[in-house]
Image (tube, rainbow, N blue to C red; front, side):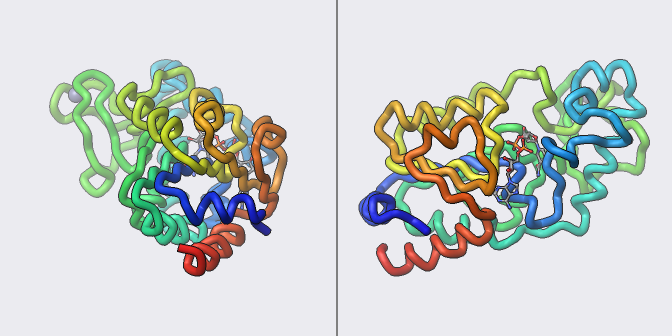
Length: 244
Ligand code: NAD
Ligand code: ZN
């Protein structure tokens, strides 16, 4: 499944960076955005998950996000998430960058985690930045800030919003410094995350893509493992156990 070249790289690597997307949570039962699952009540997710939707149609916006939170209630990390916890322990310097907002990497237990697009289990005030974790949220169709009264948003990066510059810098640095870069379960089209493997490649890293489907990254990767993430990463842990 893995080439000899990759195994030699991994045997000697000090610094490994992983970027994950919605595909890694697919085996936990969370729908991805693109493809047939990318609709909610016949509306495009990319139009719902926006600041404009929050401003113009707060009821619809919050109905959508409350539905997404409801979906997450019974969902657990899968073998792909747990394998990344094991993999982290094999390297001195390991960074896990995720575009997912589902909190599953944190629940699984990865330590050096960059949640580039935020985390849906928190609310953030649109005016004063007050944060409320899910456990402390009152049952409200539309949540308002108990400090200043402004409308709250889920603490995620909505389409059209900029990323947290500190987290983006952290992700770019980890990409530039690694020897092996894994892109796992992402369609590689959402910027600026989609550029991270190219930053890694420009700095000499070996790029591995794990995804059953082709993406714009596929032809630029050094190695492509086109099977589901849980299967590939479970196998990778067994190999690391042997070679490290
Ligand atoms: P995407 O939905 O655009 O792409 C998912 C990718 O995963 C596809 O390329 C697909 O082929 C691949 N895939 C499907 N099953 C897989 C499996 N078992 N193993 C490996 N790969 C698999 O997701 P994206 O690239 O992350 O971008 C979508 C945006 O939507 C992101 O910004 C993200 O924040 C957000 N999002 C997050 C979640 C979540 O938190 N779980 C879910 C949906 C969307
Ligand atoms: Zn506030």
